[in-house]
Length: 244
Image 1 (tube, helix red, strand yellow):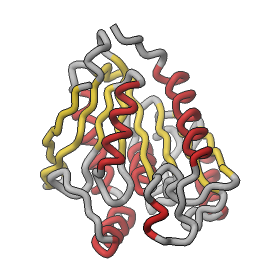
Image 2: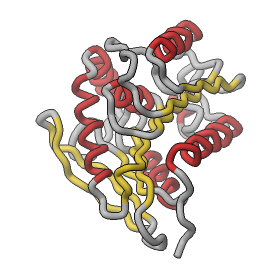
Image 3: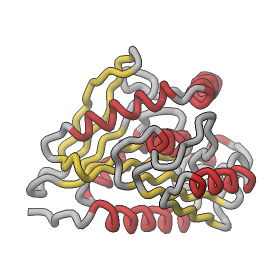
């Protein structure tokens, strides 16, 4: 496994993302952009990138805040996320440049790209799709679904999968229905998996330490949603080569 910090620039910010590649595999392979939860590029996100690399993809985890440094204080995180969501052009620009970094990697097939994200990262990759990015698939885990800039018919290129907990306190049924209406009106090939016993951040084993109602890890949903993502990647990106 080869990992590397890569500096790039977008929207006037110096950003540092995290690349993971399995050097034991031969030839080019599909690339997956990974967008972290709202705190930024933490160890959990890096482990997801490595897991994707082990599965046969080139994975690049993007940076939101600069210098590859996450934010640990929710009082710092929320104003920034709210600003990104109020005017999506900034987060779209940062995700677009991160996707370009991924596509330039010599091990990556730039014609087979996908993006996946967690919590705010899920919202980020959905904004990337709404911007018209050249992707085959986008997957959001416990992702925010709303936007101030809904897409139009013919703009979204990838197939979309969102994996949402039915007990998620910040993604209520009304938001799910609005997303369904937006995607359907835009002619998008979309899916939404709703998991009955899952809340928010169901993929994060440490989220319970926050003590926030409705935020808890759910192992079964973590496993099932990952499998759903892999199924969509198999469908849209094709098979990945076995290790050489």
